[in-house]
Image: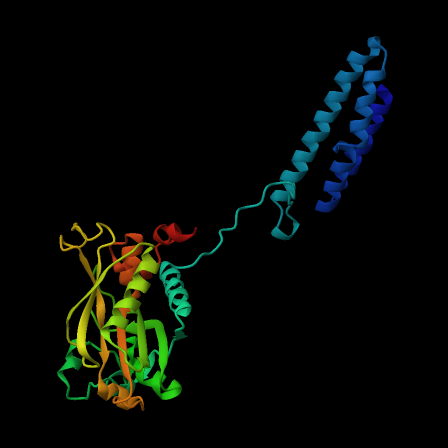
Length: 339
């Protein structure tokens, strides 16, 4: 048995000295030291030897096995220091975890809104972000001399006086009426741009959702019902809505829409400044001039519209206190939404 073990040792070491290929090294390791390897099976036979030979043979066998293992380690180490194309790769090691991507919090809110409005029969539209002055202002009842233009610091395109980066998703109101006519129900979701100084609640690039309904007999009751459905669905709780007078050139009457505070249930807290209400955005009944621009007869049809910032909705939903985090690229912030 001792002679057989010594012969095995010589054969294995000789083969290991000649190894120049990583795959061959792995094959030899499996052939001799694997669970059903030749040396492993030979060592198992030691138990069948007479007691007088078993101890000394077992000691020799363990020494040979340790020597072969050390030789394998040395060869693997040499491969590791070799050029990249000749390095040893241990396929038995656990792989590195690959981080999976996930949706941005604004995308999560946008998809929830799309789902809510699709369930109510609304078309989901996008529209151009580079827009003509006509659809961004003129067709929304804001002529070139209108003071309302001063309310929005607009990005104009150099060399193209008639092109702007849209300041609101309301630019799709007339486009939608021109294409689909009346009756009409659509939700426009997308990016908008304004030349503003950034702070915790203001950004030069932000997302909006604009909703437009054109039909016969439209009233503020329809507006309140749609807003309650949207807010209740997005925040997973029953909310109330109230409307206050506000000014927007493309609606008459113009209104500021508010919802009951989702944090205190309308009782008053620091978030709602003890009022019990959260201001969400502008709304109202579509101005007759806008209906005319869209080719819709204002004597036959009425419309409602509202526009809200998606960042504002996401900040309330996830408890985010700085709008700049959405586009800051900070993975510590973004990975919170990976579930």
